[in-house]
Image: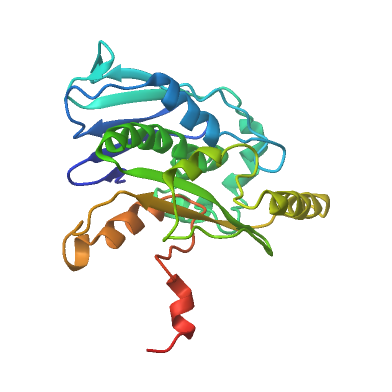
Length: 261
């Protein structure tokens, strides 16, 4: 089973949702990169459930760096980090041995690995594995920021409640600083309606989907290679590795299907 991604920067995930720990090995980081551990903690905190609107699982999510880091800086060798699991309720998933969940990897994982896969909480296929990806992303953001490249995201919609979008003409990276908290909306008035939509779904024993808009500023033109390694191709391959992601669009995206010329 391959859990490797990347060419210049290589990522390798390990662990399962209800195992002792999950983690990542990052190969390709330059030597001498000064890491701000407070900024890492901020990114990990941002990933954690901010309220009862999302998963009920509560984890500390404190990455412990095991290698590739010395005296506050990267050494240039593979950097590995582990995140220990604490809030596991494996008994809640016993039925998954025989009753796979629709839209999850329970059935396909069982068939592919002959029933030897760790099915608890989705095992290696769980969204829990996005925690070490966020850790890796926090390191990359610290590398990119001195180059003038900033990355930010907000909730584009929850159900039928849609936020205002980023304006590519007037977008200021300072705007990213305000996109924190339970429901990071650009239009704060929409946040209350989005919360109500999620709460109504929960009362009905249901859930509701949504989407995220991400923007990158300061990026120079000419990034990527033709066809298979274009910027969009590479980004999509990583974005689709997030279990819940079922669609990725760039620019006008799917709206182009209705456009002329």
